[in-house]
Amino acid sequence: MKKAEIVTDQHFLLAETDPRIFGSFIEQLGRAVYGGIYQPGSPLADEEGMRRDVLELVRQLRVPVVRYPGGNFVSGYHWEDGVGPREQRPARPDLAWQVIETNAFGLNEFVSWAKKADTQVMMAVNLGTRGPEDAKNLLEYCNFQGGTYYSDLRKQHGFAQPHGIRLWCLGNEMDGTWQMGHKTAEEYGRTAAEAGRLMKMLDPSIETVACGSSNLGMDTFGTWEETVLDACYDQVDYLSLHQYYGNYQGDSADFLASSVGMDEFISSVVSICDCVKAKKRKQKKIHLSFDEWNVWYHSREADEKLPRWGTAPHQLEDVYNFEDALLVGSMLITLLRHADRVKIACLAQLVNVIAPIMTSDTGAWRQTIFYPFWYTSRYGRGTVLQTLVQSPVYESKSYGTAPYLDAVLVWNREQEELTLFAVNKSLEEDLEVSCDLRQFAGYRMVEHQVLAHPDLKAVNTEENPDEVIPAAGENASLRDGRLTAVLGKHSWQMIRMGKPQEG
Ligand code: AHR
Image 1 (cartoon, rainbow, N blue to C red):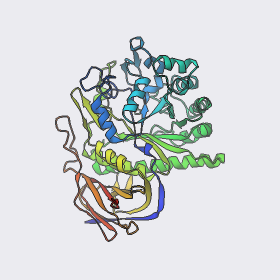
Image 2 (cartoon, rainbow, N blue to C red):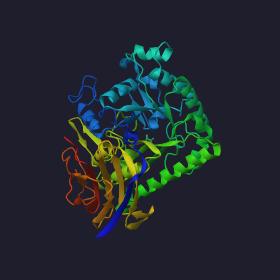
Image 3 (tube, rainbow, N blue to C red):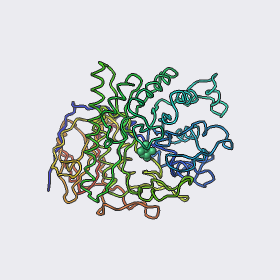
Image 4 (cartoon, rainbow, N blue to C red):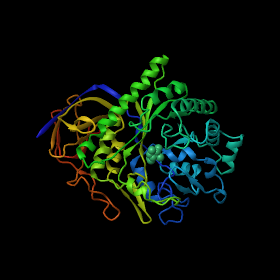
């Protein structure tokens, strides 16, 4: 059996996990909103039309922040269309997704939904077809106390108190030629600087996110980040990263190595941020907002065949399989291993659209990727420890050398709990992992969860929602300060250790 070793030290602390790395994303797209979080008239909906079964699953995921309303959608959006009396709201063609947006659901409904879901709103502004002035107006509508045109309009719409939205995305994927109002780095950097400046003049308590590249494959990657930050360093707090992966070639080993690509992507963007910081002799560090990440490829072919100008069609409805869940587990480990710089991350998306939660008119169920997210969001909060992961490796086609073992240790000092998240990517062999934990005197095994399945392509469906679910693990022990665990081939694992609480 292959062996791996994790080396750590109680004094080598990487960073506190910012809970916002367990964020997610709802775009006005497909059935994310309509038939997803919102379905008035459904017996499953509450008095405001919010799906209660979906709210329950979202709360289980403990998502602290949800980005809204896009995505590509936001770059042509007039937020005014989605507020005020419903019967007066106009239907519009959404050019991004080639559908009709009825505007029956808008920002006030989203704010209400977010409260019910125990989450905060991360609002994106349209810097595609609109600009700084409209972004400032939207902020005034949301956050200004009253006595001005837009804040009084909010009051007229039934919201006496400001929404108090703290986190603002300055546009979406503005480097993409597919984006409405696509810009060069110079154009976008300048627009983001002005939007950020006006918005912070109105409400200095907000934080802003500038658009980084749409993905690592963009020709302009690198120069885009540098040019944009050169222009708007003082007006922004975070730079965004987006990346989706897919097993297009049917090569599971290569697909599972995608987290190596994600890791390198993050390190590269950190370097660029710090390069601009040095050039500008700034004290302020720009942190990262990985505000779109997931597996996305299953639904692409079907989406190309969809007739145009439907309303809330089945778009981007990836049915996730077991290997997707393994990669999502690895991507979460990767985000945690960069907790010193990645402060926000959004699993894209949350319901129906490339999502951990699916719905039909009769119910909601958990996709395979729900589970690693659920456990990591629940137990991945605390201090990420620096670790040296000594693992056997394999050669992947797209990402070069990849370790079989992905692992991270999170120490919750308040609760006196230490949690290991690990993925064994080997498709053939179990992996024996050990770790010297003598410094954690008095710690015992608390819980061991394993997500495993003999079939990498197994899925959860409405008819069979529990095909891929976690089960209690049996092959781990913590004896004389040494953790030893046998991780089954292609499995995700969580091992929770802690000190028995007094009384
Ligand atoms: O999440 C789906 C889409 O992916 C978003 O609208 C866009 O920002 C990205 O390209």
